[in-house]
Amino acid sequence: MRSRIGGAAALLAACVSALAGAGCAANENGYAARRAAMAANQIAARGVRDERVLAAMAKVPRHRFVPPELRGEAYADRPLPIGFGQTISQPYIVALMTESLGPAARGKVLEIGTGSGYQAAVLAEIADSVYSIEILPELAERARALLDSLGVRNVRVRAGDGYFGWPEEAPFDAVIVTAAAPRLPEPLVEQLRSGGRIVIPVGGAYQELELHEKTESGTKLVSRVPVRFVPMKGKIRE
Image (cartoon, helix red, strand yellow):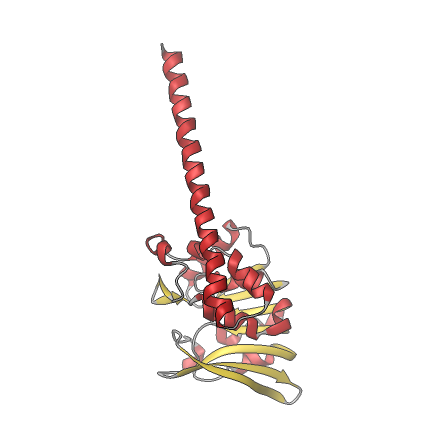
């Protein structure tokens, strides 16, 4: 009798496992369809044309980078809270910032403001390597663990003040800043190679996303568009 019960229990457990697996697969397929729609309707339709960027946006599972209770809203084109007073940027802005870096995004990229890790994961689909700095240790550790669980191997995350950059790994082909600064941080410009690009939101109550290209004589402002980001913290505020 114990053998029959044991066999039935094992069979039931196997059935539950199979059903759960099927449910998970169906759920992931649903998320994949929503990502494809997001890339087409929210990003490409608004002018982002870089095929590598669109492919990355359609691939990276944004729902894994938001709190579980917000996963139903993960593919809406708006920022979402991730805790500690921080947000994950809206998909269109992530795509726009990535595309703005141009070919420089395919090399060695420095990211200031890891946050959830989503922007780093998108960059990882395009860049050779990504170095990401997060001023909040709790977010840095959480992003590092999540990226590792997703098999992202070309991103390094560390906790620290992004104002100072990552000098031992400089020069970088591109720099992306995901928090609003009152000015362009000089250490980040210094760590950018000549010809490289930096995209950064600048301002306070009113902000603009600025794209700068480094030249032999300094930096050249390429473009700017109105945006809204959480403020950059640390040395930049002194």
